[in-house]
Amino acid sequence: MKSSAIAHANIALVKYWGRSDSRLNIPLNDSVSMTKCGTDGVKLQSHTTIEFSEKYTDDTAFLDGNPVSGVGCQVSGNKCQLSGRSFERVLAVVNPLRKKANCNLHFKMASKNDFPTQSGLASSAAGFAALAAATADALKLKLTKEELSTYARLGSGSACRSIHGGFVQWHKGTSHETSFAEQICKPNDFQMNAVIAIVSEEKKEVTSDAGHESSPTSPLNEMRVQKSQEHAVQVKKAILDNDFSTAGKIAEQSCMMMHSVMLTSKPPLLYWTADTGKIIKKVHQARENGLECYFTIDAGPNVHVLCRPEKVDEIQKMLVGYKTIVAGQGEGAKIADQHLF
Ligand code: DP6
Image: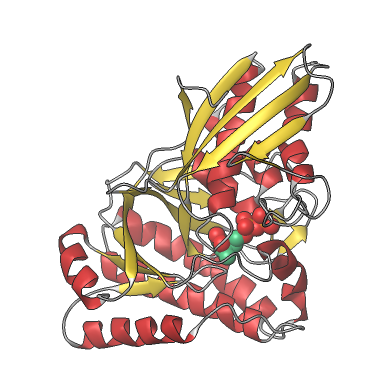
């Protein structure tokens, strides 16, 4: 009972920030994302293997070769390897699937990312999507992608969107079963790339988990939530109408509304560095000069510059001096032949 899966990170055009149920990761609003795949070297993917067997006397998990600890991530001097609740998040995905399959066996899990973990590049989304897919397969559960997305969500909210490729909508729902991700269109049906400027590869100081919790302390939170529902409908239409300008404008506004909530929360959250601001200005300037591009930023300082594929070279020139990763669109979570152990 061993299986492996590969899943990719995603970037939200309409952001998820704040939840009505923090145990089940039920969000306050619908969100929409693009599943990414690096076009050169770094694929922005997570490869995960899980095995259930009588030979294991305990459940264990390893990320990039390091054990994932039960509390807080204090692994003998290593940096925190999974955000927030770490090992509990792995169990949050595996336990309900193990129960559904009537399995009493312990497991060993190993996961490997090909990009920096926990620096605001959605490593947890790729990781938990791959974990859900590998676990369901190892346990021989036949689930639809929508069902699978609900289990990925239990590890990390945004992970539910990485179950699908291309563009994806996460319906907020009101329960475990109704909060799922659905594909809007397949990879490259709507042409958009992201040139990611890596401003910092440091682990972020405040996890998204803590940020979701503090979002209701912002006086702007309710407005953002309401507006996000409208944004989700509008961006989906723009994607299906091949309207890059509208999709880009909404992505930028959704990003700024999320960061406005972060900045006005108690305690305030500022994920940007001076370089983040400089790149935002470059994007504004580029647009004034006729180069159409838009930015979006997750819970970290790195900036995704969204553009049509034929503009990637120009955007890279604009970002000269910064390390960049060019992301096209990725497939959804897939079973892999190769095992990590
Ligand atoms: C800023 O999915 O990392 O990337 O559910 O606590 O794991 P948890 O949060 P996570 O939240 C990330 C939110 C975001 C915006 C987004 O991806 O929609």
